[in-house]
Image (cartoon, rainbow, N blue to C red; front, side, top):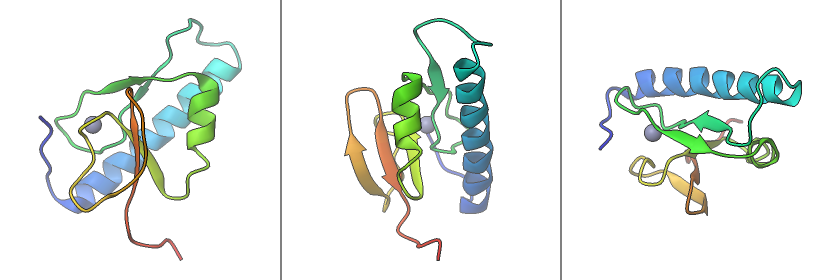
Length: 100
Ligand SMILES: [Zn+2]
């Protein structure tokens, strides 16, 4: 069970996790990290989350195209988040706030 601290912390964690995941993707694309079972970090942003999500590089690349989207483990969507996509391995969520 994940639990949520202040929303500012969650946003900061999410930014950090997205950066880590993007770098992980870049490292795999360049062949620095090998293996078929890429595991990206759950981007829910909870301090208590240790979720890792099995995704191919292609899948993660596609998920980057969701505007304001975050890839999270099943069950890790926050209350009041918009669910954009649900699969067995992950959920793509977005906050309702517009970035405009
Ligand atoms: Zn999580």
